[in-house]
Image (cartoon, rainbow, N blue to C red):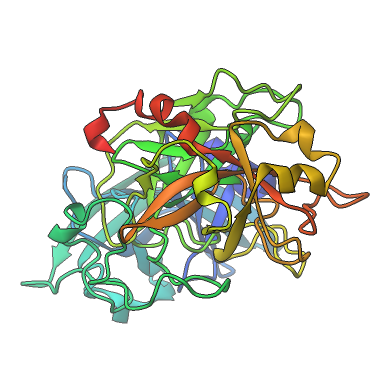
Length: 452
């Protein structure tokens, strides 16, 4: 555990070592830190003592609000991991204390409501305790003796009688029995009160419940890579190139994680999102990045079945035949967190756009480069107006079409031509999509057909 604590402290000092999420309320001296796939999220806090403070016989209290716990054997832990001498005036010393909170639940993360150090209140959000969304309260108490170098903690779980049902943003229950019976390609309108199509603007949370964000580690830094599409309880479809670095090295499966139900890229711990880990990442055998981007498709098999909710639902997988002729001239919808018209590399909230599909002949004649990046298993779509279309960061995301009232996956965002002198997409040209219809048998080989 000492090694873990040392690693956690280094993660704070070196900003490249971990992704940080500020706490919504107790922002002064407390952050969520995503460490790795084994430790997941922990809370790290900083406390500055008053002068004359003595390190012996320290007491500390941390309260946090949480949802119901499946297992109450572990209610979390609290420990001091470092002292740092800040200032010394005569015989008086001032210390910076770094403390660590480990949580009993990861999704949603608990909300710290109260922190007290030696009787001094550092953070007080007690009005948020026993709220409808997180009606349970965990109380952690720590004692520390600097002379003996010993510390211990106790934990207690309390709750109000008959807590209110768990809700999210006042839009009704996050999970309903109907979520599993709606079938694929349907939005749970019992909890979402806006239409799906919003004319290319920022989309409302819950209107793209099959949109998945893909992350991976580069050394010890966790970063967003691509979009993806949930198609069943276990399968996610995305682009193969999302799992290769700039040196064409394949990203290891253990360095990949996916967030389902994510809306704001800056808030992966939002209620209703689900961090999932892959059992396997399967690149199509015909994909060869060095020579061609042909067969740019991958299937991620999740380690655990995902439960469908208002924010997490699958799209349908295309089942109308492989001919591209049937979709020429038709408009599909795509969404993602990619570069926007203001030059932001990623957008905080996902945006969607409607794109028309064009024939292979039209695409090939539009630019001399397209014969090298298109094939029988791709198709082109776009407006060629310089502003509307998927861009950097949207790779792997879906292009869906409505079929019999259900949103159905036909394309995966693959590639586009770059703007001269830069690595950014050129939306004056068409965008290339991998044609999922050509790979249906391969995709379904990773699970039972009845699961899709």
